[in-house]
Length: 305
Image (cartoon, rainbow, N blue to C red; front, top):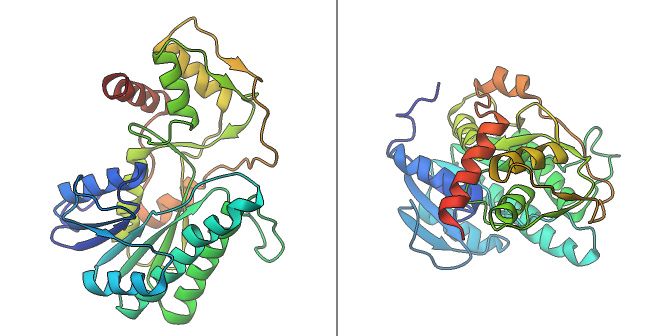
């Protein structure tokens, strides 16, 4: 059970605060009485944020000034360049956004003795022996390096950092409409048939509000520093099955076109260890897949033309 008084009047820094998950997290933190500072690359005034800051987190000195100015009680680091593409041109953007930004935050947060840092990991990170495992993309490599440095900072410098390893997050107001759930939902709502890969890949899907609950649990839980905790449903569901659920919700009887787009190579199949998450934090996902998809479709039906 989440202690709803824990965040009251605490100063919280959220990077990626204007994004899909970050904006949802800021709303919850504001509702819980936190003083929320949001970071964005562009000047903003909207959202449930007490103050917006404009900063490039891959700049060491800009990050240091930001953290020292705010002196946060908690940092949630969600800013990220998310792309599973393998081309070399994605290497440096992935390094700057996913590795350097995390490293700069770890250095700055450790310098001001921030009491808690919650980082964002990815299911794309290599499994097993980090020294020999081969990442499948620049994004996966950068995320894996950031997680490794987080463990090092905790071990060497006592930095109170914990990493939330996110699985496939979906839900209302997902801003990248090329992602499967918004793409299929909007295509069907517009009377179009989505063009898809084979649909055979199995994925661990997790509803965005459950992810926000997990972040809040990680922030308030003591004794988990240095850990990487899976945030997923603990169940695998194929892409085809998710699409069929969406068809049944939006346009029963319609048919999606599978196989019209080539599958991406080296896609990772991985299921979250939710028992480990529950044993450490008491958090567990609450939203069944079909219910989450219904809520997502309802939001797009109301808010997006």
